[in-house]
Amino acid sequence: MTDTTSAVPVVGRLGRTEFIVLVAALVAVNAFAIDIMLPGLQEIGASLGEPDPNKRQLVIPAYLLGFGLLQLVFGPLSDRFGRRGPLLAGLSVYCLAALCAFATTDFHALVALRFIQGSGAAASAVIATALVRDVFSGNQMAKIMSLVFTVLMLSPILAPSLGQGLMTVMDWRGLFGFMAGWGLIVMAWVWWRLPETLKPEHRRALSFKAVLEGFGIVFANRVSLAYIIGMAALFGALMGFLNSSQQIYRDVFGVEKLFPLFFAGGAACSAFGGVLNAQLVNRFGMRLLSWLALIIFGLAATAMLIGTLLHALPLWLFFGLSAVQFLVFSMILSNYGALAMEPLGEVAGTAASTQGFLQMVPGAAIGILIGQLFDGSVLPLAIGHVTMTALAAGCVALMAGRGKAAAPAR
Image (cartoon, rainbow, N blue to C red; front, side, top):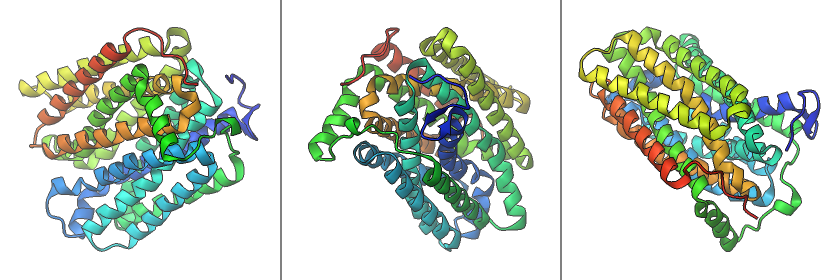
């Protein structure tokens, strides 16, 4: 729909560059809430009296479960009331939960607050995707999503090191203070600069029947559903890595202090993948690029599995294979997300919420399973990645095939 220079407004007063960075900042609200926690998981558990290292991981999936579930609410709300109001409400919940977590003294209360925090952040994810679909479509949407993903991946590069730095001057509570501050900055940006992007004629009723009808449109589209399920499978693989990565670098390779650097290196590869996808998508198309990227992801996972079984997986090889996976992961998710949204422009909020729910809730569950199966080796992670690659490939091949996306819903 829109293909213009960065200086010309694409919506309201926002030029292309500011629009991309604002959408990335919305998504980074969620990324910071996950990645900044990684260096502090063990200290949080020790401080709040949780002795089991695997249970300390629950600080992350509890957030993701709230994040996934509430997307089903914010999607229909944004299709009825527009993007701005629900977005500001969700960010308010996010900031308030972060401030309460800053003050808590109980591990179980912290886990509950993380669920609430994720619930508020659900608005930012759903509406960020809907904003892009409101303004762009087709390969152009995939290109914008790739650029958003590139800016987004700066947060995993910075977040673990930032978390480690904050914990040198404060305890783990400083992490939640940072989250609240970042959320308030994004809220102010949205309030002053972002206009309403949902056209009045596209607003949908909020009745039970209308909401069910909207979800019915999404689930009836086999092509969109195939890519959404594929995203869920691969996101589960990523969550498995996030949940167990610190323990792998600490217990398997003995380099816990270097963990933020290794994690930042993988995130840098993912950011490069987003840039690469943005440059290639108009030339080769979303489907071909996503298939090539998925094949590479699966080959890296298989090599990791074989190396683990043969006891021939040194640190450099594990990091190299993980870096390759990070690089192509951003290409897969950018294209899958655009392919899933392309036929559903007139129910973009509901479609984005369905996409987010099916990605986050099963993905978080898969990530919990992989993380809890950690046994002091890379084997559970490698098996999980191979299995999720096969699931994604099977769903896309059987349900979407090589054909074009179905026509947009009317």
